[in-house]
Image 1 (cartoon, helix red, strand yellow):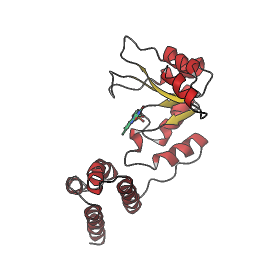
Image 2 (cartoon, rainbow, N blue to C red):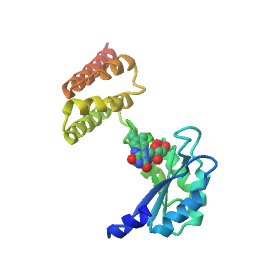
Image 3 (cartoon, rainbow, N blue to C red):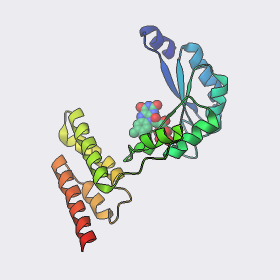
Image 4 (tube, rainbow, N blue to C red):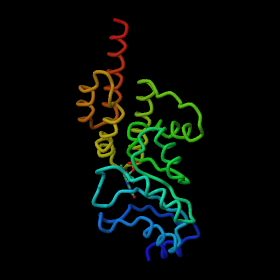
Length: 205
Ligand SMILES: Cc1cc2nc3c(=O)[nH]c(=O)nc-3n(C[C@H](O)[C@H](O)[C@H](O)COP(=O)(O)O)c2cc1C
């Protein structure tokens, strides 16, 4: 009923994102996908876990394939893509028309160009160095602040991204501890600059 109502209310194509079911007993992605299609969905994206799974276990990519085979509308696959090569594997295993990436892009927006290259059979673009990583992190932070009315709230919300952007950096634990306490963009800029100059000192020592 919701899909029909949305579809009736707009001339734009209605697309739907689903999970495989509410829980294991009600797991039935193909039936759910067919109902969406019958109600007017022009594309269906599936994250093949149940609602009760939350994020536990693995996304069942075989259910993406089953949906591709059952539906006439394009199916977008989603779940557990953490690198460009995963995108290619999902497409090759399921024949899905598109892929969606969520958590894999946390602190790693480069995953999209790497996925594009893998899907096109091109060599993966190199991962960024620390300087580029920090530049993009700051640009992302500025955009996030611009988007929110409350600047302080925005930067506090952004702390999790600061953690993701700095994950795995050499000697990064202290930096992250400090980043998790920032309340302004200026503090982030200072901490990242400080980290970079300390790393440069280490390299030239
Ligand atoms: C920060 C965040 C916000 C999300 N918001 C939504 C949402 O509004 N609607 C939705 O259907 N799924 C939402 N999801 C779920 C993702 O779209 C996706 O289905 C799920 O994370 C599995 O994909 P992944 O393994 O690439 O993360 C969200 C996920 C994350 C991490």
